[in-house]
Length: 345
Ligand code: PEP
Ligand code: MN
Picture (tube, rainbow, N blue to C red):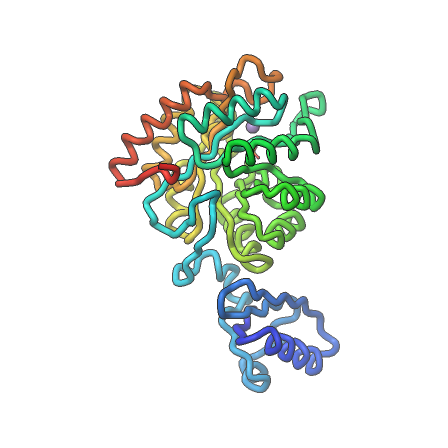
């Protein structure tokens, strides 16, 4: 249940009234004052006792009943979501494409710096690289760890590029805040880690939420709703491929999801064809198709010299710099059809 209030004090008054009227019932209360003028009081628990008569009695304006529906903010086309994605201020249908590119995990500082410099020269919105990586096998390289955050900070300051990095815990969210990371990413394997989601939302940092490989769009949107309840809704929804019986690609990239998510929500939608296909020569065409489906953000794995990266890692899907240049060229052609422009130009 969501009660719209004029102030935090009003929300607190309503909480006290409900506790006084129903001392033997269980409730959780969350006050969200991240929105410009409205304060939302979100209540879960025994909300069926808070009837219309009770609402009248305590003078509370209920704008959403979670007994009837499960989503309010994320699908509310009336409340436009505006927030920063690197140096772009996202507004629905603003005609811009954000390019997020970089290696999978961080290895050496030299490779990282050279990759970032080369990408900057080609044109890029946000540089991505992960201090740690979740790997299915414990024998695969898991990243350099905390030193990686320092490397990213140095790159941000030397090259002036906004930075994206993945987080796994509150400690890493704290590191992201400390090192002034522009965008954090919650990976596919953590899409249903609601504790991490709440903490990411609470940090205020723009977050990429990747759809779990075993999840559907409804689950993704519900997870995104947490960002409004516990934060200010600055979440990017990412399609990165799902697991199916198909084995010719690493995952099955669901293009229709991009169209669906764009139409169902106000949120920016991201395509990650690198993990979505796991096949280098599919990354360009699938990204082009994603832009036609309405994607606002493209995330792509690129390395100055993929042959040099630790194997197997994500070697098979990693573009070279010249392939990245070709990706930009081909994207420009399809972007012309929708009259879109890169946000870094
Ligand atoms: C990544 O972006 O490098 C990554 C591991 O993504 P995912 O969580 O989608 O597998
Ligand atoms: Mn990867």
